[in-house]
Image (cartoon, rainbow, N blue to C red):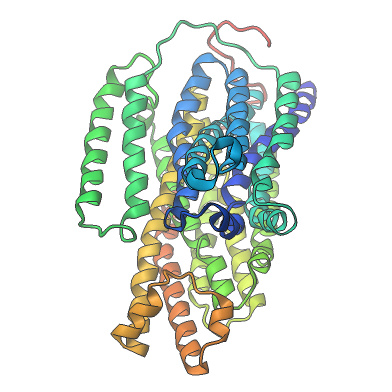
Length: 515
């Protein structure tokens, strides 16, 4: 009872930190037209999002390892401060204080990367701190709450961003993080009590540098490939060579490091390896497919940007309810293997249902389909984290948490890239068949950024052909997501159900005192 009271006291601060990291990943989209209108730099638009994702992905394993070495409370507080500083600077981009709007877009991109570095620490440390405070047998219900908060933030992001942009100023999409971050900072500083390590250690800076360069190269490949540069261009091939070389060097460096960023011996554990691959596939199918749902709703179904966010509420609600129910069930029974099998199977069914959508599909039917997807997500979103944490020793809890987040993020990046290429190729092919090569090229040159108002002004026959082309391209995206979703329950079958560690947190190996 005493431990439960302690967890519930600190949980609001942890959830606020998670909301900050997840919300800011989504909030910028609806503000981007205003940002570009004020700062310019439309050709660098995607980098406002990419810089944040890159900073988060690169820093996640590093934050996890440093937390394992030095104690998570101080590291968590530092990551909150970095995130808040990055948020403040993002809001100040292009102001007279920083030299005016001439370099505003470059400043915003750089500060978004700084913000992403802080966000990486928020995400991984929330997961690891819950692991420190709660034994695996009881952890499911708390990670279910975390999954519900993540689902809420994913949907709330575009809605909050649209409201702030319409009624205040786009800069408040970043400034709003400051009071929320300050509350989280105070709650964590005052309420969180964790052991503080006192160890003389050396940080694996070479391994961290190699991993960061390799990840950066991979993210740039998935961002630029097929869009800014052809897949066989010198730029993409050069980045591919850089990724291969740095990641190949990373392996022997980690084997020799005293305190490796990612201990490679963890991958000798079958459960850890399987759940890492499952996390990659989950991110691949889930984030890759979800990216295209608002595009379908706004173009084919004619919803506004705000309404398309509201139309995702069935997915959020289903994911929240299932996450909470699964968490309570795991705590009550200690059993968890059946849930990733069910979740993966349901997610595959959802992808098949979404692939059936066409021009005449009503919004209510789309809502049912994405609710099914939400059910699958609810079974899976935190179970990969729970299984990863339960398969390693307590001293590697942070690394296991960061690795789970890392593989899901990389999978999402790859999924968005692959599905984007599938969408573009099918869209152009459909347009060519309906309008001819020259007209198809002119329409497709918009890159999918087709305004509903402009579509309404088109001739009926042309508009019908465009909508049918968009719908067919969307169908291809979801068809491609099916095999990746199917692979998740197949892998889950081979996971051994290791008993969740009992009713007390695993003891720390290092001498510690309370902070």
